[in-house]
Image (tube, rainbow, N blue to C red; front, side):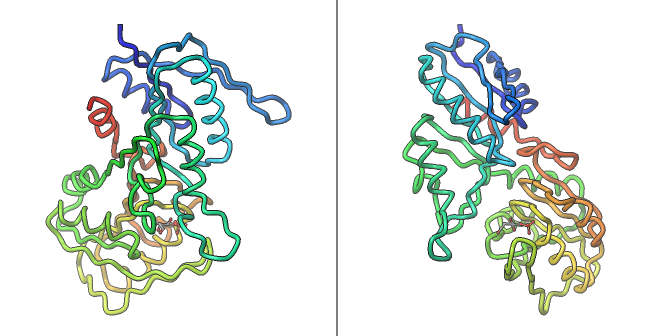
Length: 292
Ligand code: R5P
């Protein structure tokens, strides 16, 4: 009998079920309720002693999810599981990767330290690695970074003809450049200045995109301001059609509506975070890695 169990935690249950089905592993959902005061009640519905758990959970909207995950992983160990692999298609808290100002929390390192203590392996997709270059710099456990650039390039090739790729800032270079290479087109990487969470400036000086189909590629869309400022610049540069594509579509504060209103013709994201734009399925990427 297969000793592996796939555990799906919100918001990744659908993805987890698909992965379990395709791998022919048992699927298990957890019993999770909330007490009136907001504390969590969690129970394993099955005996997991001796099993290898593959927990699939995107850490979007992360604060409560991280507590949930820590409770589950620590309890799984107490109940005698053989190993825990966390598949976090979206790993949050990675952007604070350095103390930019005195006294700041470096969340990327702390989250990794906490996970190191209760899981055996982590698999994630396109984590925001910038000043921290590799997952192994912060994870002591086995870690694997997967990337959606191939899937994004395939999607663009199938749906948008003669496209040019634009990356909004130097941090988007790794995605914009890889996607452009795979499509066989050019990538323009712009310069961004961030003054606050909702205040960004993107410089598009000298950019000429007359009659081009532009695809703006980034890893994360959160408030959408990075995309919106890029769209403004790309419009000034006379682009014909504008598509916005990202790995992780957080779309907070109606970001999607604002992006469309600012002139994008379409938005596409991967299903690392499920939403109505998540047309690019990452399950095969995860399955291939688990099979290894
Ligand atoms: C940061 O460098 C990331 O790559 C994204 O550009 C950023 O997280 C997008 O945030 P927002 O949508 O809030 O501008």
